[in-house]
Length: 153
Image 1 (cartoon, rainbow, N blue to C red):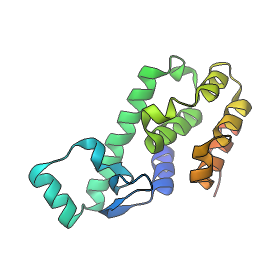
Image 2 (tube, rainbow, N blue to C red):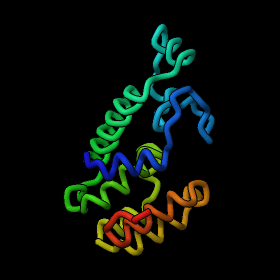
Image 3 (cartoon, helix red, strand yellow):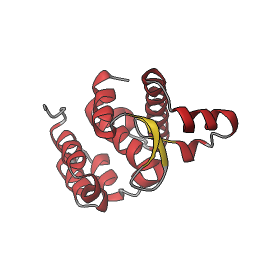
Image 4 (cartoon, rainbow, N blue to C red):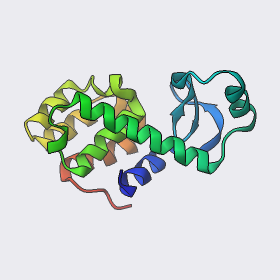
C-alpha cells in the first residue's frame, strides 16, 4: 500500500492510543480500529482497555486494516484493477470509514465508476448522508475521485 494512502487515512482518522467511542458509538482505538468488530476478548481486551496501545501497535493495526479493506474491495468490485491508484485509495479510505457493507450502499457511485464517469461518482459521494457527517473528508475524497490526484494540503 502506498504511503499516500496511509497518510490520507491517518489524517482522516487521527491517532488515539486509548480506547474511545467513535461517532457511531463503537469502541475504537489507534487510527480508527473498531474494537467491537474485532471480537477481542479476555486478557488482551483488558490490557488494551486499561493501558491503551503504543504508536507502533497503532501503525501495525492500520496496516492490517488497509490490507483487509483493499482485499475486500478487490473481491467485491470486478473492475478494481482498472481503477487508478488514487481512485482505489478513495475507496479504501471510504471502506475504512464506513465498512464494506456501508460503502457498497453507494450503488449510483459504483455505477458511475464502472462507466468511467468520475465526476458523477464524486457527485454521488457528496450527495449522501455520509458526506454531511464527515464533511472535509468527503470533499477531499470527492476531489480525488474527480481529479485523479491527491489534494495538496
